[in-house]
Length: 252
Image (cartoon, rainbow, N blue to C red; front, top):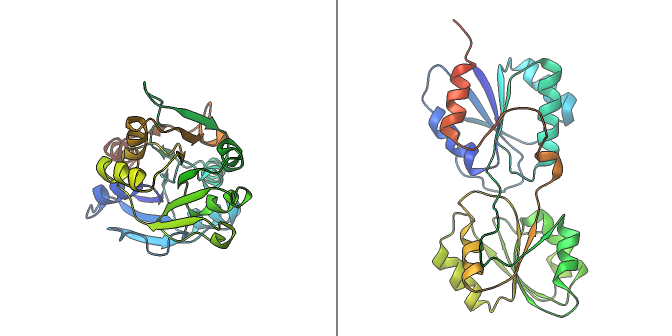
């Protein structure tokens, strides 16, 4: 059975490891190509876009893909939309493998906003020391508030850093420990944290550390298009996704 895994998440990598070496599943992991040095894949992989919905339809047809797993990052709304439209047009089974979003706990001081622009506004006019953990593509939005000092953590260096006169860049790849996050906030004298609600365990430690230190967190909500009222089934566990694949495996 040929399947396409739309990757970019730890869940996609975990599913790829489960599939690796299986003779009954021929899988390809597709990455957006936005990370300069992605983690090595245990299965066949490709990098780059498809050219919109039409390009994805052409790829799925040409490669005779039998099912698609959308395991993209929770904020990759455009790719998620393309996957849904392409699979609907070809009547292909589609599964969404995603992380459950985080929910505030007692002691959390969340300021929930819709997007990066709203997150910038939530920081206010007074200069603050900001732990910015929103991914490199969202960093340029914060050039609208150059008065703040930003501790920016990213896998790859963002563009437009010259527009942020007060910043430090920390290049690192998750997962991160609670101790490391707490130390970074204390040593950086952080006043406030900015995060996307990506969910999962790999980056949750920063939320727990902010809670312990009583720091406010500007939390960017997930795109509304990701949380469909109806549509493809959604799972949070790679093992469950593997069972779904087995259930849709072609009959010899």
